[in-house]
Amino acid sequence: MATIPSVEVISRAAVMLLSASAERLGLADEDPDTSPHRDLDEARRLITALAGLVTASAEYLGAHAGPLRDGLQSVQRAFREASAVPDAPGMGPGEKYTGPVS
Image (tube, rainbow, N blue to C red; front, side, top):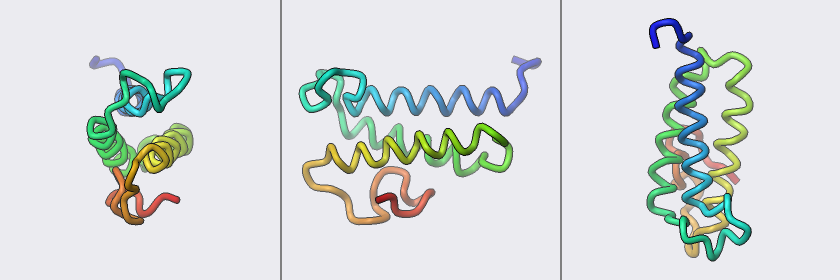
């Protein structure tokens, strides 16, 4: 690990959180609504952690920042769409770090 640049470590962690979020939203399955992996409570936690990491480290991510922010917004929107009772604007997962996502 000592030889891996910090941006790479941060990016890998962010990609893992992003992938886990998508899995918990059921996005890896043909029909997310019937996915046995869907767990919105777990997805909320993962998305919030991802938002905190991406927001806190944005200045260090360089070219990686944009795609990671885009991925974060995608799972935030997917969460909103999957919720039976959507959160108020600014109250969704990670939105305390990113601001409201529509």
